[in-house]
Image 1: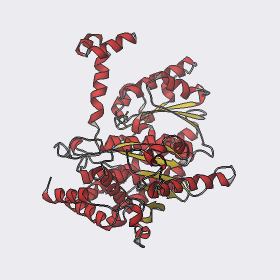
Image 2 (image 1 turned 180 degrees about the vertical axis):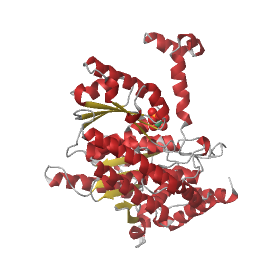
Image 3 (image 1 turned 90 degrees about the vertical axis):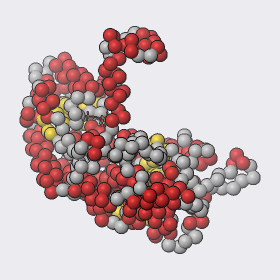
Image 4 (image 1 turned 135 degrees about the vertical axis):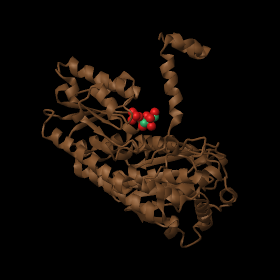
Length: 501
Ligand code: F6P
């Protein structure tokens, strides 16, 4: 670590922040820390960020070449150093380097042609999609369609990820094999869960008397050779760039299920919203840059307050899949133990990410947030415009609850009875969407991507690899071989025996 980096971290760690309420004595605070970006409203004022703390993070940004790292990301340079690749999800939104943008456009046109063919009944009449994929090959499309498809979708989208047959059983309920298109999504086209589920889907089709089940299967992959070897016809394989990471892939051909379920215009509007956030992240000054300020606040709580957890609560039922999406994005990207250069990290990286939906969570887990010994930053995500068909007072109550929680966490309440006292000074950020639509959802997801990148850049780790998941996969393969079982410990051998495997 360079001297300037060590100095910047030392200043962050030593920063003695007053209570948040005290910070509000500065009249300009709210205006400084609450602003709009890409048409989303961000309010960081109920955190401990102040001008001095932001200046410490700007110093850290200078010391870690943050601006250069960000430029390299958008230019399509090799930012994923351990895998010797660029990370070109921004090019999918037209905001990357010229060649990457062009390639993304070509691949998107190809996706558009396939969608046109599906809609023109080249696969017969299709009324449902069985989307098979796991992790980044499922979470993004599932979130988008669950969030935006409440008013009805063009097709019935079912997503199946788990290798547990119960998941497939549930996904198939009520589907007609004759009118269901199976979409296998796998960047590597070698993920066991996905390939097992594709087999299960093909068995389901042939079991129902479909003569050529393979003709009802489409593959979305960055490894088209593997899909070809699998026996899928070239015309039914949609490639995407291997420089698009799985958890950043919903913008690529992986988004086909979004486009089929919600329509092409909605998919394009998501890309536009994300591009708007790209431009904000690229161009806004750091002290008015939403992803940068969010990253600064996140890192402050980990490194100054020792918060090893971060919670997100969507006060909107339509965003109930946001937390699982963020868990992969943040924990798989930044749950690292070495720097991008391979040296052991000398500080904590990603915290545990969890959360849920409000107001349900208030009646289940908020006790700990208000009075527990574990203090962590909390994020509220709410939507101003009401689109449900119930009495508007319900939506009003929903929003008021979100805002009241943030205020209560900050102010706390004194009491002579310690059990009834609230210490307060508990930080929260709020993101308010004017309305939940394809554009705002795209901007919101891109905000989280860039916040994750900004944290990684300041921590000098590589957010784009995920070697930590490999050992478990290897052991799962080895354990399936009876000959190799002796190598396993007594506990594991006993569990296998008890389960009758
Ligand atoms: O095992 C982790 C992981 O590789 C994720 O990064 C990825 O999103 C998921 O598995 C699925 O991988 P694939 O798209 O190659 O099937």
